[in-house]
Length: 264
Image: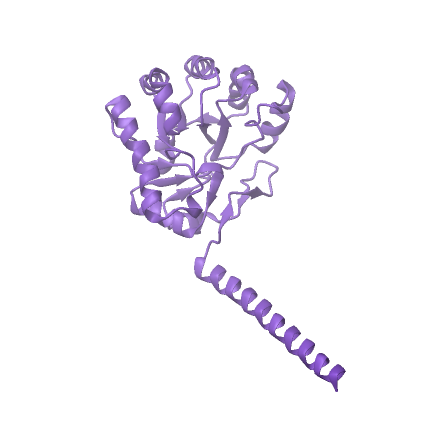
């Protein structure tokens, strides 16, 4: 009798555990459906033969939120962008190269950069580049409250105005490319266009900088019409290779355009 009761108790416990597991799975599934675009990081695939890559959110879905990762597939244009969480000593050289090559770029900056490098920021503007919003302190916008979301974006915009005397252009690049449908909707509600990218490589890791030739091997085969190219201005290699890379891209028949021409 005792053994029988034990078996009943064990059976009941397993039943309860099974119901809990099923409930958790169902909750997650329902949450994912309600979120539309679930919590994710920007990702790309299906490169090659000059074709635009496929993003983990398609152009049509992103367009509902004034979000972009690529331009017109019928126009041989490149949109050059830089992310900068801090100054690493290479931006002056990058700006020199851009000026020499007559290439416009967009620099997505955080609060720390604006506070410590106001003269570089002013030079970017003076030489015709766009300075845009990368949030004040590079927080993951998927996991902040609506109030904190607005604060991250607005604090950077206010610091930019204090530094330059101008209103910031409303382009937002989410830190590390993390996003969900709610964060995209929040950005749009604030008048911002969210800008992802269609081509990048691992240039941000200062301990694993690519060689001169590796940059060409990773970038040139993946070029495509309407490419939004992401580089990091903190990269020593980018500072060294940028002039030759821009020249080679031009030789491939591409024209560098301002982000304003993509999002108009």
